[in-house]
Amino acid sequence: MATTHTRTAARWMAAPSILLLFMWMIVPLGMTVYFSFLHYNLLSPGEESWAGLMNYEFFVTDPAFKDAVFNTLYLVLGVLLITTVGGTLLALLLDQPFWGQGVARLMVIAPFFVMPTVSALVWKNMLMHPVNGLFAWIARTLGFQPVDWLGAYPLTSITIIVAWQWLPFATLILLTALQSLDQEQKEAAEMDGAGAFSIFRHITLPHLSRALTVVVLIETIFLLNVFAEILVTTNGGPGTASTNLGFLIYMQGLLQFDAGGASAGGVIAVILANVVAFFLIRAIGKNLEA
Amino acid sequence: MGSINLRQVRKSFGAVDVIPGVDLDINEGEFVVFVGPSGCGKSTLLRLIAGLEDVTSGSISIDGRDVTHAPPARRGLAMVFQSYALYPHMSVRKNIAFPLKMAGMDEASIEKKVSDAARALNLGDYLDRKPGQLSGGQRQRVAIGRAIVRQPTAFLFDEPLSNLDAALRVNMRLEIGELHRELGATMIYVTHDQVEAMTMADKIVVLQKGRIEQVGAPMDLYRAPANRFVAGFIGSPKMNFIEGHEAARLGAHAVGVRPEHMAVVAPQNSDWRARVTAVERLGADTFLHLRSDSLGAMTARAGGDESFELGSEVGLRPDPARLHRFGPSGETLAA
Ligand SMILES: Nc1ncnc2c1ncn2[C@@H]1O[C@H](COP(=O)(O)OP(=O)(O)O)[C@@H](O)[C@H]1O
Ligand SMILES: [Mg+2]
Image (tube, rainbow over the protein chains, first blue to last red):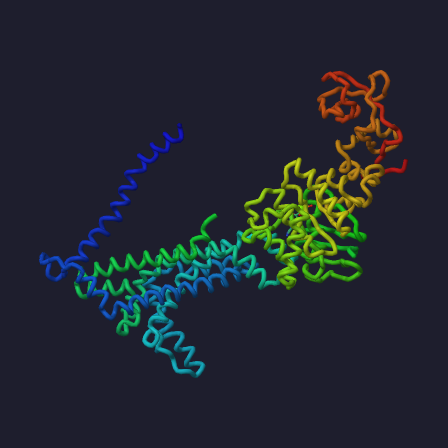
């Protein structure tokens, strides 16, 4: 009785904050949905008129849309692949006892503290630049033709830059998970005749599955709307070669001043993100169950 | 199959000599118990034999083959860990099958061996569960199952019963003993519990600070302990030690007498008198905790039906044949 009572009271007390959070979410979303049904150009305020599904039709049939969806997926999957595989390897390495372990761990974490715009600029001007960049210098020193990374492989280059930023996150989570692996399990496997690779495959990797799931879920949420790195490096180009959905919406709204079209894009992006989340949770969410 | 010989085995972690140098021979089919207080190096010694730690110096051979530098998998031993070390994401079936799978055995033989082991250990109903869904005793059985399917030359147990409740512990003790008789394999069993050592062992190895204090059959250690440490460690309740004037009178630095080797008599019938400070009734026996100025604190055993009053004085008459005399450094003096 007492607990039912307390629970009811707790619900009432939590209600205002939940309501506030709900409003916080629903008002902008509602306005976006509303705008997406209007002809609404920022250059001619006060002349809004009902557009029906026109904005959606224009946004979806724009040839840039198909490219943007593809680029978004490419970027997300590419970064996920690099960070999970690279993060696992790095975590395994950092889990070994070696001299200077503390410093090495700190160094690996460092990229996470660099702002996306700053890191993208550093990569663009100091590493990938075809004339002044470090990679170009290495190529020339070795007698090769320097590569114009952002010009020739814009999307791949951005994928590399973003992966560099997220690698520390993946490494950190996976390293923590590795350290919680019971040493006796590894020793038992060793006595059972498992070699280093079998131990990784049958003991370590299953132990990491939950951490890997967390990494994939969290990264996906952030990677679906990568923006700063694109803005400061390629501006979505050449053409639409490195335009993702978020960047396309930005161009629609703030470069073409079409708030209605941008809102329609935003709604589509929300729906796509939910579709991705749905399949993701279906596919790997069971790893999170206790 | 299953003899193990240690020659001058030494192990240090950095500057700390955990095992200063051990010689030990374990014969085929023996049930050997390493016993000693916590932190005395029992686990370390076991892990050296298993190959999970490298010896600092000395050599280990199994069945006459030098395995000092062989990896664990090549020694043909199986180990049951204190934490059981089951693989949490694998079903019981997969756990037991794991060593066979690693050995590259075919599916059909694996299936047969796993179901044989499961039947022997009463795990048949749990084969598809995960370790997390089992009770402590069942996990223990799975760990044993995983060890027996490979038919190792020897089994190593590291305090396997310490996570079980008292009733289950007695049960598992009997079961492990039965398993030993059935398989006839050499077993090395580590425990800090002298009751487990006494009840299970063919041969007890008493360790202290990484040194072997005495090796022998349980009753030999009980009757003729090599020193005061072994005398105090083996037997329950513990042996009484008397120092000072009383000991000097018998020509020793200390004399020891077990509670069960003293008769509790009327005070006027004995030279040793003490006051009752506590009475523990176990039913068949009554243990008296006593104190006196000349003897110090003592424990004595009396019959279950005798009655004693707290604070009353009793006399103690030790069996002279069962008195142990110890020198100043703890060594046993000849009778
Ligand atoms: N890996 C290690 N590094 C340093 N010291 C250790 C290590 N393993 C054990 N020791 C030390 O060795 C001693 C014996 O440990 P252990 O063999 O586990 O004792 P027991 O099993 O008898 O309780 C302890 O003092 C412990 O602190
Ligand atoms: Mg131990």
